[in-house]
Image (cartoon, rainbow, N blue to C red; front, top):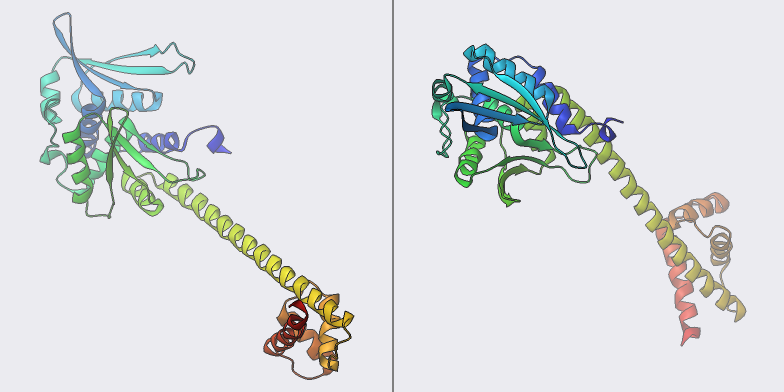
Length: 314
């Protein structure tokens, strides 16, 4: 199954970069991606905008998007991390007109605010969140033990503004939390229905459908397991009660205590069907006697046996 070969986050991101975006939404998307994953460098007295990602499809998408919107000619390189995971870091380097590009994207790396012109309606908020998710977002597979979506950010003030962004979105309600973990400010969701709504917000509809399908199957399986455990518990309880009653019956028989014909029939059935419930015993007695025997009648007979046996337990 796919959950063992490719992460669910990767599936979501692959779907997002395959979608098409109008220029205004693409601008908001690039603004978020650049703000989170971009950095400015001076190389040989030239200003360079450097963007990084570990996903080659995202790298190509961002590379082509900058060419489309700004007519620049970025450099596309990759680096191999020399560790046991052997990760590849894809880098996009943009030079020339950097100030104009950052001004159009309304990015100030020293400012924590998100510009209003980038997120003034739901469509642009959605695009901004797509850029953020592509840059540093992740979502657990619905096969995992807990549901979790997050976006990691470097600055506290920016994280607070980012949290407010969810409140500005009118297309859904999200209980977004912020925590500090491993030198990052993490925006996260834990509720499955809200994670699905967020995937829909992003435009990852296929991933949202897959998430819901797996979640429902998992929840039904969980309900089935709980019902099975409940059935086992009830059966164990019935058997325990049955064996205790049979002990009382054996005690009364050993003492030669008088028992009515109806009680003797009940005793015979109780011994023969140790795992039967009182309701099932009532049905069997009804069939034999050709009269209606209720569960309450069976309870009364069992209570009489326990009371008689209690005289010999003292």
